[in-house]
Image 1 (cartoon, rainbow over the protein chains, first blue to last red):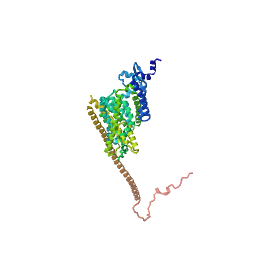
Image 2: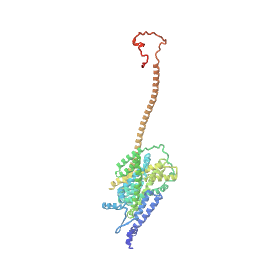
Image 3: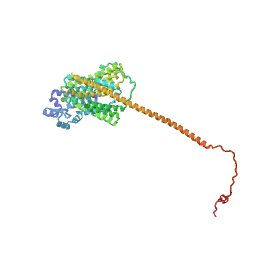
Image 4: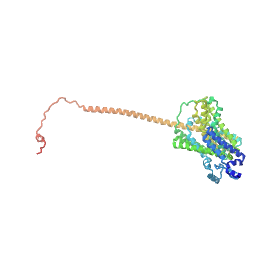
Length: 406
Length: 114
């Protein structure tokens, strides 16, 4: 049989041999990485809700490559780089994930949906009980978000790309997506993919960092019970959500969709709208997470992701996350010394706003050192504050950087 | 150098805004607690009033008893007449004759059917 006919019958396999060697090796590596993500998701090492669709998407998009014309390859999933309206209309009718990408991902809608779901799951009572402590820890845990910007610029990125990649330090996926969409539309696919990959890694990596930086004696500290535990009423939480939303939207109109999404979730929860809580916290959140994972996987097309800057982004992403964790633990140590050794410094890492992963990681690490120590209420408070500070920093970056670097 | 200054500004802004949010949270808590306290005080006053009313109601029931006793006493006392002469006298009453009151014209017999 003629070779060309064989190539046409099995384009997925034939393109592995006919396309550029780097791309072919990249495709094979990404297919294997996809399988690894599914495996690690199944083993609960990485976040399975995100990693399983992402792994499948990554493997499928690199396997299902078609010959689209002479010397041209493509797929029937989506094309994130298309900008020409006529071509976009064509693709919306051809690529099956293009409508979801164009109408929910590239405008940040899916990030807002996820934020609404997070809002519904958040109990801001933990934040309201200790607002200054929680906010202090959260600001400390943004160390990576601040320090990665000059590091990235020193490594050759421009200020917009540097700020976008630095947002990985906030460990908040929707926030990274939103910031990179606004500041660096050319790199936003790569930055978002790197961010979500690393967010999965926090679950597996942070416990080791805690063990490395906090001795067992300190990890075992039991938090003293509060002399007077004040019950936070749902109306108090509702007022907070509404007022905080208005104030933050007034301060940062560019990040207003994210603030609104987060606080509308909180408001729905506190108003006790059970049908909406069930919808937002169930089908909307899980549907959005599933589609987000799938899209992130599909965006890992070798020809797209093998950008010369991807290695740089991978390095910067891990630097940002490590610095933020170190900053959070530093905040925990500061509180430990201020309270005369009564504060468990591990709580600081929960300021990294990967809700609720980092709070769970902190509690798990403390539990291993002392099964009777419970730090979850403080950790959740810091965690929620982390979401708010990440949103504040995203708003500041999107607003101030274009002003200072015109 | 410029980037470090900008990052410094952004860091300070974040710090300031975060504590502004924390202060806002505290303010909301304080305000809501104050309102709650006021409501509780209001409800305390209400409770006090209710207690007074219930006490008054209790007193009212006592007053009813008093009123009942009073009425009984009054009725009892009304039945007591002035002391009268206990000497019984038979006084002859003169009655002039009149055919209008004569017994012989009175209907003493049942009508008979013949």
